[in-house]
Length: 390
Image: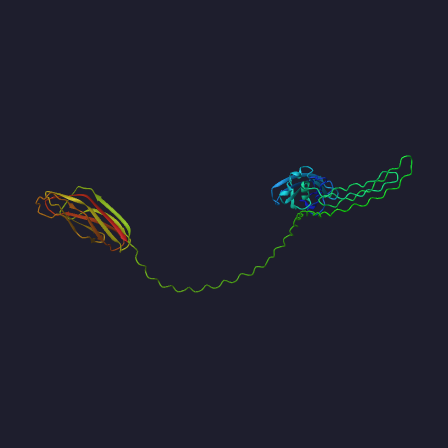
């Protein structure tokens, strides 16, 4: 028979007795082993039982462990004596509740199945009686009458009661032996009176066996076929609605801050001689993207004159593409050459130009000297043109 996960149905008998203050440190255990279908295992099935006694709680400290091998009989019954392969006297029964855990291994599988843990109740704790005072002595039986020729029959003393258990009945008087010399057999002596019955001991409480393992769940039935609904026909597409009227154009937002659209520069180190008429000394080309763009021009540099101590120069800038010219600036001193130390003329200026349309613009710096008959020399002349706009 193939053994599945066993279902252990337990009938547990635990016996403890004390004779002459000496208690056998052993507990009897019986169980019927069944397979997962509820059938009793076959006779001859090898079973290994592992017993563990826990202190105070079902998961408390193990205080005793023993493994007992056995073979099931024709009824699937196994019988074990707990303490036969160990020493139960190491268990201190006075410290509180004790719990017995039972595990089983079928056919030496190497795996033990936990069959549950149950509290040991009144009967196992009779082991503690080994250290208690003996029970009261039962009454002595009455001495039997003397046979005609035999010795006087004596009733035997009843055994000592166990923890107040029922006293044993006194033994029947012994029949006297046949008298010597071939005399007639004496009559049977009278039966001694029955000894007084001792007090009834407490009723023992059997331990309830652990609950059997639930059998496996039955197989799931096959899934029914999926129903197929018929797809309805596609509805007609509705006609396209008329186009709505164009909304009114909102007002133009406020102009943002100016941003730089182009920046160009040119430089003339010098020295360079100049004349008394305006000459384009430096030119740059910038690009505007709107008629509202502005062109900001910055100039720098200086000039010296020989033959006249009073340096003087006139200069301006021009958007020559659109014919827009910035203001004319005179720099330095304008005098009569009186010899006041040979001053310089400064070409520092800032100009603001506009444009008539978007496109490429030519920006030029025009310079002339103030005095005739003198040599005018420029140095480090620079032109910077920046386009800004929204």
